[in-house]
Length: 187
Image 1 (cartoon, rainbow, N blue to C red):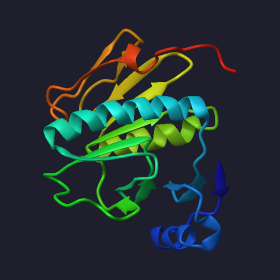
Image 2 (image 1 turned 90 degrees about the horizontal axis):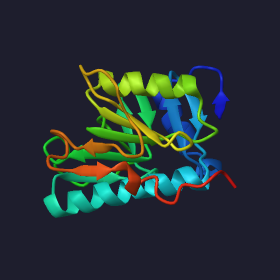
Image 3 (image 1 turned 120 degrees about the vertical axis):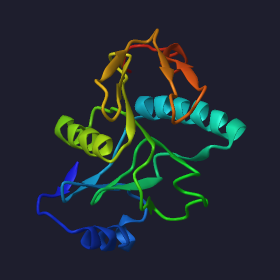
Image 4 (image 1 turned 135 degrees about the horizontal axis):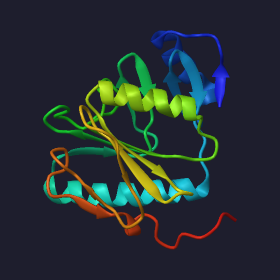
């Protein structure tokens, strides 16, 4: 949900999110617009599966830092909160302690929820890829994931597909049936 149609600067955004009334809210800065992030339980569960598998792999291999839906990144002049993010230790040697890491992630996972704006998602994907980030966009209702990577055509995988971690998470493989387990119609 876009809160302000007026364009704001990064400094204005940073000041806005520090206001006491915004303590328990999540915001992104997309094309100069402040956007409050909301989800639903199903999208959150799927994001949790992605987070679990990526984090377990990372813990075994000590490659970098994995963030959940509250860990943000600076992508160009924008601020994003992917459902799951990963940044390598090569790029971020120390454990980050800020709301928005001043770098784009190496990997961003976005699980689409009914409240997501297609326009804003498209902008985020474009900006992520332009910043060198690989993006996995999960569409819960279709049980598909589309992979966007720099200098590569998008790849669409159905629930039987396997995501390969590539150079970002070498040796990582995730069968999407693990993500879309127990899929049932909306309740």
